[in-house]
Length: 469
Ligand SMILES: NC(=O)C1=CN([C@@H]2O[C@H](COP(=O)(O)OP(=O)(O)OC[C@H]3O[C@@H](n4cnc5c(N)ncnc54)[C@H](O)[C@@H]3O)[C@@H](O)[C@H]2O)C=CC1
Ligand SMILES: CC(=O)C(=O)O
Ligand SMILES: [Mg+2]
Image 1: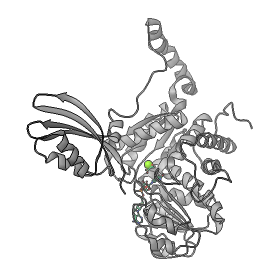
Image 2: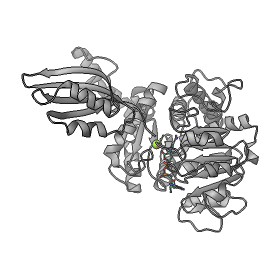
Image 3: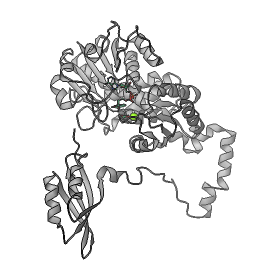
Image 4: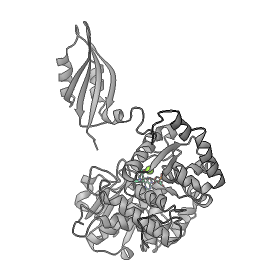
């Protein structure tokens, strides 16, 4: 699928050989629309210009090849709005007060700061009131499962982690620090996160590949007294459940009697299956590359063993095709393009299809639309975007505000109900089962629901002033 973008191309034009007119016609013939021209330098023989061009496909390299091959033209640099938005990174640290004189200096730094340090040394609980701990989250990755891009390493993962930090701040006013670790060793990741954890109010694990992500989260949750939340697992599961609750109302079906196929049993898939079971689903079929998980098979992965024992009630064997026969719901968190129209035609009437792989869904929405009663993807350019960004800002806002020790099952179920309830009954339809991330009610409703669930389950260590019993 093509994504339109704006490119900025810096060119040197040798006047004796080529003219701007030549450049303009070459761009037009390659499908580019010129929207602005800036003269950077106008020399006697050579002019340098920045040409801003709209192209239909962000991956279009043809334009640059054509320009580079033209006599008298030298392409100096190519940029686009996406790259420009990333120049120098996307976030920074800003002090809350200026240091204007010696007095300010001795307040915020030595000698004044020493008394504050000693107060915390004597009562570590004061870290919550005297440092940024109460409002900070570490976004930790090892770069091994970045979006659907795979193991691209910690440096290449940073733009996604900076993006998560931006979303934390804009949507929930949480200060998030991206930490990209140059190790894939489970024990080393656990040790590093434990060692840095005292400065943070919570840990958001991100894009760590399965099955290592399960052990890392389990151990950190057990060994730390702040919430540890692997967003690709639980954020995704919470939002998928929220979307499903509303989709089921649209098609008038009950979760307990639905046949649900989840494909891609990695970080997201495992957590989706577990949360759907907790929400009352009884017929889940978990499908990965080797086929439907079943009791008869042996699995090295403990999560798969548990799922094999708790899903597939009919002991079905086979793969995606067999699992989808008569299914009411398809949830894909696997990879792009694995689903076809005949798969959808084999499903039950009034089927629900969540093709959530990023950046390319399991089936192109245009292809799927005529064969799915309710269709959702992870993308922002189609209706019903099911993305974990609907969950992590609000769930952490709630967990930080009530100083929860963990994010437990009840908090996740409450978050899913809260997201679903933002869509009012009279608004709900096939095209609107999940609110937009820009809907201002989402974070606040998730926050409130999560705090109440944390209080009820006794994991909250503080009752925020705006919450009444
Ligand atoms: N929309 C959203 O909010 C989110 C979407 N995702 C997307 O879901 C996908 C999976 O993410 P993770 O669970 O973090 O990755 P992961 O690597 O932990 O799991 C992916 C699983 O899918 C399986 N898989 C891949 N191709 C398959 C195929 N053809 N048939 C059956 N199984 C297949 C793999 O074997 C693996 O078990 C990615 O595309 C990711 O971008 C993940 C998190 C959130
Ligand atoms: C959305 C997200 O977290 C992912 O695709 O990995
Ligand atoms: Mg992710």
